[in-house]
Length: 230
Length: 230
DNA sequence: ACAAAAGTGTTTACTATACACCCATGG
DNA sequence: CCATGGGTGTATAGTAAACACTTTTGT
Image (cartoon, rainbow over all chains, first blue to last red; front, side, top):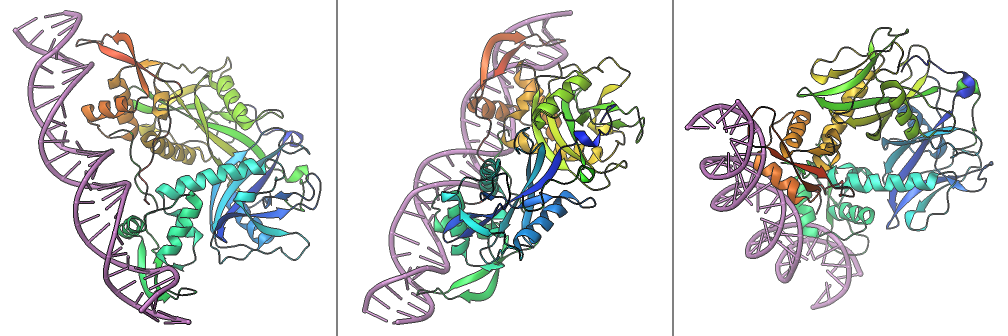
């Protein structure tokens, strides 16, 4: 920051926090959306989000918006990217700090009292979204797939206890490809990030009950990438 | 974005763009800094940056600030992270969209006329910076090292034509470790991202002249990571 | 006893690493 | 002819991928 110091209030863009909340439901990757009640884009689905408060960090603002607007709390959250194209909001200059969040299928979302509609939408049949929110979702999906491959954020898509088949299915749904069961289990167990519980899940219909695991706290979350250079 | 619509001007934070420009010089990784002329932190070194203009994207604002403030242009630039802790600027709420840039040692920086000091600083002996800029630099360094391992951004630290030893040295300086010459050359040549030129660089003192290479435009920039899961 | 899902090892191909000597040039 | 940096190949270890049958449970 240099000689040109803090600008006149009139020149300031507005700044919002928007959230892309992913969850695996009904055998599909879903995003949580809210329906807009006012112009512009009235009636269209949009990402939850809003303005920060004066004494709140961006992360805190994201968490608060999530809770207030959708009832979702205690989920994995990370900053995604800041979008600031000049005409992305027809009302004027609005810069949006986008976050992405991962919620287990057991997490419930509900409108906070008012008449705002909140709903999960499958990514395979996403409606046209308000503003540039479609672009933000695409970017978030790319980041999710990418991180799934070399970090352990994937566990954030599951409840505390889960079976290895449930974990594998979540991965397959997000990555959009089938994985080999034996290799998957070997890798994930060898990584030493799971703790076996003594409990089992009865399969709905029939079949052998599956052992439940939980994700170890303090587990390493990043796996070394295959380096381009030695 | 929901019922709470665009807020009063008074509630709006100011928003700046700050730049972390890395360059390998004098056998060290350097960052380009400017000395502050005004309070707060008058006399301290800070990241170049400033406010965006109404009809300018964030990327454009970053590029313009870089050119205007330091004379640096046509370098690799990418958005890093947005910093928005409530008290990071003592004058009031300022949210900063940080960018990181890579410049070859042949790129010159110079103050734009005025009496602003602009200088490269080695990361091994960085002065205490203004605001939270020290934290921003640390975060940028982490990102640079990370990307160096699994993308080809490293080439942005070198001029158009370079020798393999120069390339290897740049990697060694950024990563802070020695690399094996034969393995390095094999990997980088096998990756098919370099084109051999017919020219050679005379080594300063003595020794056999080294072949010059250039980075292929359109080369793949990402290398597949070693996946945690099969 | 059968249907349904859980669980388990081995072989083969590929990729990464470690390592030492000859080559071209200028003084 | 020597000092300096450039350039090159191979053997070994480790990691990834492909692949099919047995076990446990409920009906």
